[in-house]
Image (cartoon, rainbow, N blue to C red; front, side, top):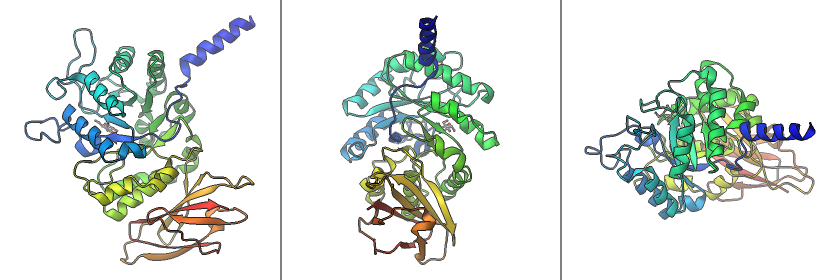
Length: 407
Ligand code: GLA
């Protein structure tokens, strides 16, 4: 009887639990959606259409320009990659004009560069852009992805009933696991509940998914970054506890280097996303990106805070004079177990000057008995003046990003 019980528990655990050992730190990579959308006209826009050429070009850049070395390892193909019809065996196929070599060949190309390969799908009848969805082929599609060498699946939730997503995504996750190929599982089901005011089941998400899109799609503007950030702040006490190694809240892509954010606003997005322990999935043009934007994305000190092994999601602690102060506990710990912290100050002001403002350690929750050594993440300079007050000057719609290393 006991044996049977144990067997049942093992079998049940294998069926429902996400146990792929992946995404121990927030996933990092590149995805085409926000920058390239669903451009399919390769005659008119040969360098911008969703095609194997685009992904090979970006994969090459990820390696040659240091992104892979910095940790950006996944290159992810978003919507609009497939043909409009499945093949005679019901399998998804890549669009033959834009991906003439097929997805397996593209995955091989990416793997040969030392990168990992991600692919989009949709739980419903159609993808958001109207391509075939997986609802009636969940197992077959998981197997097809595995046979192509996919390492990361983004499963969207357009054209689907949000009431069956919790169960349906778990079923798909079970099929992913059953392929034996480790694949990061990025789920979108909260993005079809939370924006409508419906709270998602984060315990279920943690069991099924490595990361999940909680809220609206990011657009190419500071306003969009703000709207997403303020939703996460409004809900941070509910969301942050669910973040950790293997399972992450995902506020959507980094738009640094695109059209919409200034240099200072780009530093602000980087600061917030790093402190939120958010997945860092860039969506930009790596060929034409200006060096100062690339430097933000490759900033080692910022990435180390994002990739901190504890995986604690930082929160917005204090808001005063239109400056938001964010705090994220990180390693190293002091000899008595107190945290170090990533600390970010984001300005929502527009009076031109760099605004001077003080925050005490106490109001930020920095409680290390012997204080902190404080490093400016973007300038690389030590800023500690031996007091228990942090004095900063924050540029309009910009950020100051510090690392407070506990003594
Ligand atoms: C949804 C997702 C986006 C993108 C598009 C593709 O809107 O949230 O991230 O994948 O679909 O159509």
